[in-house]
Image 1 (tube, rainbow, N blue to C red):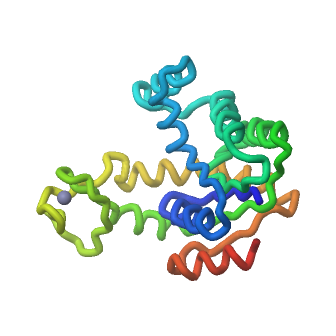
Image 2: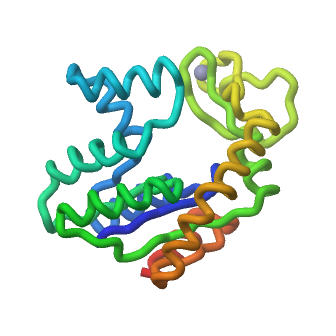
Image 3: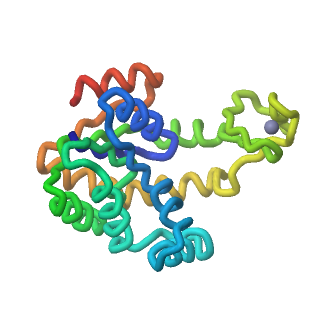
Length: 211
Ligand SMILES: [Zn+2]
């Protein structure tokens, strides 16, 4: 089973991908994590990815995504299912993605779109903090001017790009670049649109029903 899971920031798709991986013993291909692993390697590709994501802080071109997919799929048994988390994120990547899968005799069985409204995304991401000291990530419910970490009393900070403006910018990119990917897969009847505004367990149940 090969599943693609897509969703706006704050949709909880990463959490759902982990749950799916656990339940069906799938390999969890988290694109960001896979790129960071490659970037740590002392290879030509590793150095190139490091330069792009750590130094220039840009998105990797599609050919690199294909190479990274290739390396990962090459390491997996042919029968090992995968949940692809956050890829392909634009139409250009779809072609590379499908080609990489085809090379390994794989096809996409289902695309799960965990959908939340812009309002919900803003609400959820706006509450995301991390501790300056122990790096603990947490959600802050109350309005508080100087929130502190419950573990070590360190200062809690929001991610620099988790401002309303930053979140809206990323939502626009999703709308302009990733929605066309979902529309493309819809033409092949592969998409299950899941309401992501319920709690984690309910969303997971809905995903299981859709598979
Ligand atoms: Zn802390």
